[in-house]
Length: 309
Image (cartoon, rainbow, N blue to C red; front, side, top):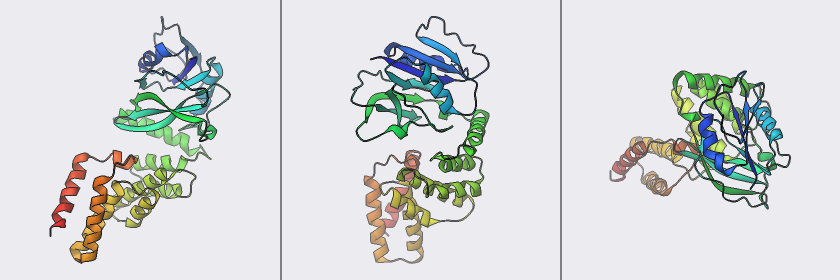
């Protein structure tokens, strides 16, 4: 296989680990530096070809610049703060694009990272994508897994990253995930009213139902921070993504509150049925993946106590 790995970096020392993790199964590494100076030692890494790109707040432009320099039949995209954990053994030429599994901490998600070098280019300034080329017939899943450390940052580094992303996303009109991520950035800033506005806008966007369910759940959390309970958002979230734990737990909590005030046999049966559903759900929804296992267990113990009253 003739694979060109394309990496953009801002002179981040972590990029050396990224390079080492892919070095032995690619033909070349196109390294695009977006700062004025590149000070890292890449001597002895003959596969690395270093280029400079003047940063313009567009990740797509930087990635596409690197792709334009690539000579391989396939493109592998990896970030400077990522490490590939599996080699690419085989790519079937009948497919044009391949998904890889990326781990943000313990949270996995599928993202397009491998595609033919046949003219495909990224679009959008932030959370850039090549999904516009995907069809059911031309896309498959690779064994490649990637560990991303960029979400492990905290404190001032995280604040700066959120501020940068907010600045870029505010100008990235047309990006289908613009409202969703603006909601996340304002939620991080504890501007809950602004976050709610963007999360509710997501419900009219052309995004998948997981994004819409997640937006409903996040808007619900923001309303809680403001002192109100909007349980209809939880019901709406379940319409978008029925097999999830977070929304069902919140809905169950609401029903338990009603049952405490107005004990009703029919409501009790509904609560018990919902409890059984929760025990069988293995959800990959982002809200669920962030739930603490001990918190879930405590909630289930509370429900079990009510079950026998």
